[in-house]
Image 1 (cartoon, rainbow, N blue to C red):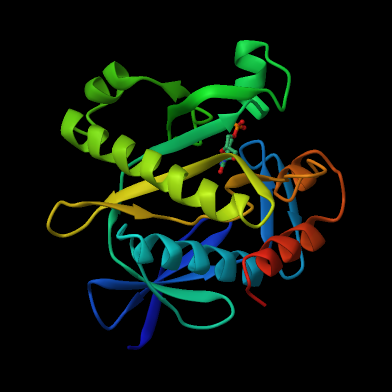
Image 2 (cartoon, helix red, strand yellow):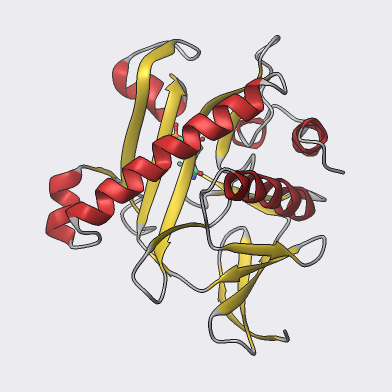
Length: 236
Ligand code: TMP
């Protein structure tokens, strides 16, 4: 497998073609952005940490029968993935009120939700990723009702797997964001990344934040928090 031209550069990752049309290489960057790119910085070592953490989560999900675009980790910063066409939705699953849900419902951060909440945001930098519902998704034509059911079922299954796994490592999975894509056969496959950039992780004892909120809210110790997550997952 040979890495070829860069296809796309996002805020936190680059995507490269390979000599196999069905495989891409993803390279994780140290760049951090928040609030739709308005806040920017570099966090030394973040790309490496997120690559390793994300790989471990994809491997965990695979071991539980949930496939994703992930094939294997190639290096400190790179993973090999299957080519998918990304569905322009950010799928957020929540277990504890935080961030925009705490604001929307007027609930204090940290209040446990009586059931998981699944939300869809329309991936559009121009519009600022607005919250949308199933009717909006049908009108936009970004996913069929069947694909949306598939996405929701997978998202809730992923929530169960990750919540249990993290709870055993004294981490609360507060909420997280997933992206899905369609493979060449039209199957809905989990894609993108699962990392402290895209999840809220709290220490279960102290409720200390071990995720990107440390960057968003200027709490300091971003790299140390990501290192702690990797460490608790058994990585290095
Ligand atoms: P929110 O509370 O700001 O809506 O975020 C919910 C979850 O989604 C949280 O775990 C962080 C993640 N997230 C992203 O991965 N990318 C984003 O652009 C945003 C806004 C949130």
